[in-house]
Length: 265
Image (cartoon, rainbow, N blue to C red; front, top):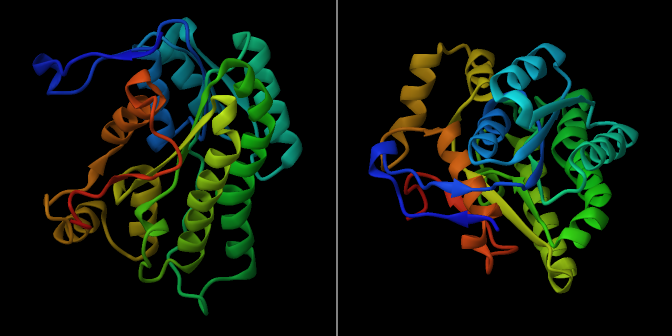
């Protein structure tokens, strides 16, 4: 059973989850939200397979996670790689209970500034990869009555300046998640989209660099638009991912869970 215990004040008020024996696949698991989620699942007792293109970072997470974390290299812009990653995770873990789709890319550009290659890459990673992984995983998750957690964005809920392709892609992830939640609810499969605001990850810091900003300036500017006056951490998103996959969220499916520091209050 996957449970969520009461907050542990000694752990900074974070929820303590028990995923003992659960089998988890995290795509985009070598960096940012994916890596934080993989670590959190492993710490909660789950057996975890992560996927990504960076073999060196994948090996590093495996070392950090010990025997509970394994790595499968894959390029999720390729449908055959998505199928292979899901199959490898299923074989290594003896089944699947949770799939987290966290791989993503972002380009800071208006429509006129967005190149054909940037548009296609954004859609290939952020939309196609999520769809292909979900499609391959659903037969396994129907067998286990499992859960899909898709990392969308607050950019799926409203427009953002200079993020045309990213907004389009994350809107697609949100709507895809809603549709799949309806299609597979009777099979006992939950599909939960999570919509964070700005999260301090290598991807966000890369966006700052593209805009000519150092990390400190970029984070300060991003925090200025948030009522809680800071950006979210990858570990905070990981806690929401674990909640979404836990029995505590057994009646949650299809509707976005939002971490925006009060921006839409």
